[in-house]
Image (cartoon, rainbow over all chains, first blue to last red; front, side, top):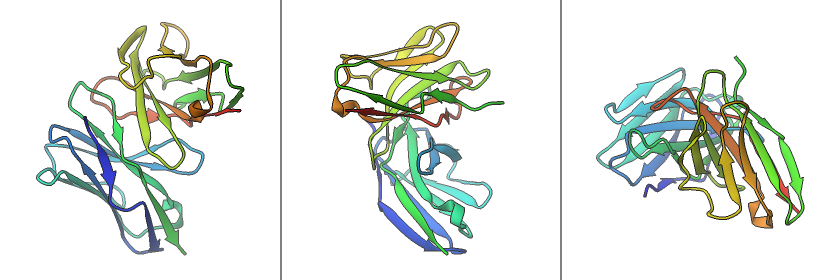
Amino acid sequence: GESVGLHLPTLSVQEGDNSIINCAYSNSASDYFIWYKQESGKGPQFIIDIRSNMDKRQGQRVTVLLNKTVKHLSLQIAATQPGDSAVYFCAVRPNFGNEKLTFGTGTRLTIIP
Amino acid sequence: NAGVMQNPRHLVRRRGQEARLRCSPMKGHSHVYWYRQLPEEGLKFMVYLQKENIIDESGMPKERFSAEFPKEGPSILRIQQVVRGDSAAYFCASSPDLDNEQFFGPGTRLTVL
């Protein structure tokens, strides 16, 4: 089965700086990867996704990088703002047609004003 | 377009009682997923349903837990004879079809006394 881990449980970043959150996965057949943001008392909110045929994807202030060789995923947030403070989860789908997501344990990002 | 709706948001039950959690997917979405989240942990997949069908229940405990998604009305996650270990946040997600982003609801926080 799939296991998903995160390298750091907590991360503090000065407001305005960039942050990088990392995630490792185990199943080389995994084909779809998503980053979610979860604020206290709320459900996960989609941030950005990437498929296995890509190695980089950019959104507004966020970039996801996928390294299939070492089975590593990262989320970069540029010019962090106080509203970025939350827990960030990576989620992995085992393969197309198998829709259940495996979530990592999460990294708590705190933006220091 | 309203998002995924879950109710109740908070549910308190005594050991041995039944808990019923409801999820209304986004309009036009026929795929529903249930996940459970313990404090300070990631979400764990429980079950994946399409209208009137259970597609994947590999994450559901074999006893006391059941799920349905009838032709009309919300999806229901039912926990019979609850125990303290069932205390968790239960999240529902929906998607319009396969190979699509899953949108999450706000969750139901179940507390078993």
